[in-house]
Picture 1 (cartoon, one colour):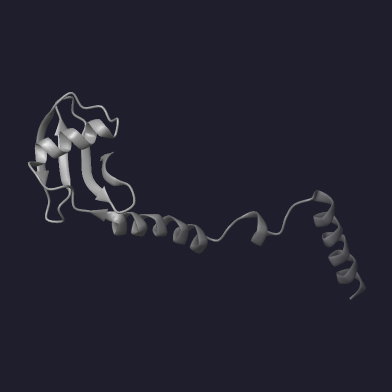
Picture 2: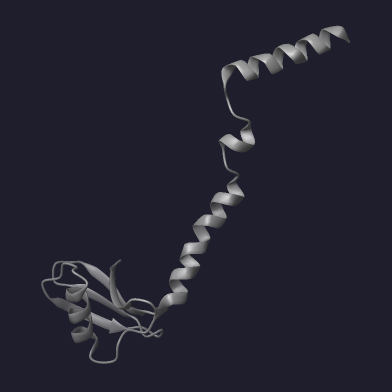
Length: 110
């Protein structure tokens, strides 16, 4: 019994001396990191609304240029069922054009 107490005290002293943090503080749980990764995606889809009305290639060209993205010419543009536009540029770049509730029309690289 005394040997166990001495061993336990020695172990505690060794842990305190090395300066390491307990496992709960040093490494976050897998659940916490998975939750933080899911939340932004759900938020993005909630703010993504249909692209402005009009000819998809013209809307895509104007919004891509206004957002400062690189696109020499829009070679194809299709409006999806959700109203967003998927545009492909002559240089191979691909963008999704939509309206953000807070920022207005946007183009993001795909």
